[in-house]
Length: 322
Image 1 (cartoon, helix red, strand yellow):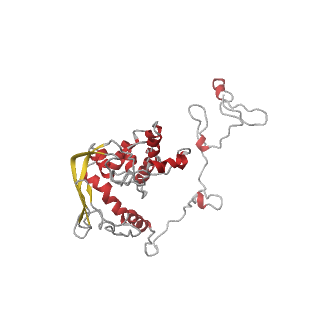
Image 2: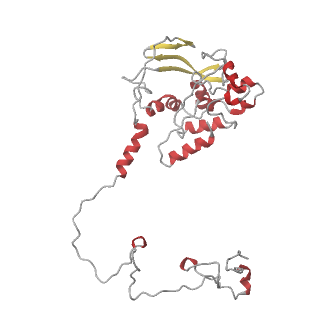
Image 3: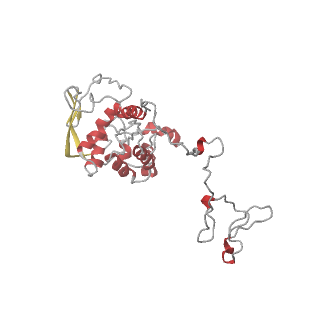
């Protein structure tokens, strides 16, 4: 719903995390500026469980990420309430039932804002509206694909035909539409599901009981396949080998690694401690010395460097650099 959440998802995916982003049709087709409409009914009709953002550039930004696979699929979270139901919150906005429409207009809105605008091609449109969701929910290729053995859910789409979205003509049993007045290029002419034509040139032809329950098994390959492969690839593997029985050089003492050191380091007898010369500016090589802001400094006697001296007040604590 927001630019910031979309950026978090996109960054996480590019860091190798298995995470998916789903902007809903409302966030792709409209914005939260309607909350300031002077008509209470209009403003209340826009109230959703996850609020629309007032930045008018949000829908275009989310569509850009969706087109480029930073976000993966679309939904609607369709939950409609009429004006009388929204009026439960007329005196307290917290009591307004949360929910907006979207499922009927989703395909047209995404085609208009995505394909017709040139941000995505028709193949990507099919992926974000159908195939990706089928894979995430682990029902692909039964759903999300037109092939022998898959369910025959087919939409005949006319990309050149237009329609204007309106609560006066939509099929939803609600008196408000958040996309009211939007002209969309791209209209479904026919929809065939389970061998039946359920939409014919704008006329919905369904009967109760036509639908079938489709189970969604756990651990889809799209979501969990990489996790299993990573666990396999990163699993420590023992290397069987014969013990080393060759010669070993003598007379060399090796200084142990600091993390494994249990006693004073072993230093060859010929080793000497070397004090490096001062830097060209007269200072100490701080990476090879113990450093403190108190006590004598190398430039204490140099009047030209007096402004760099550390002032030690009574008590020995430094008050800062001059």
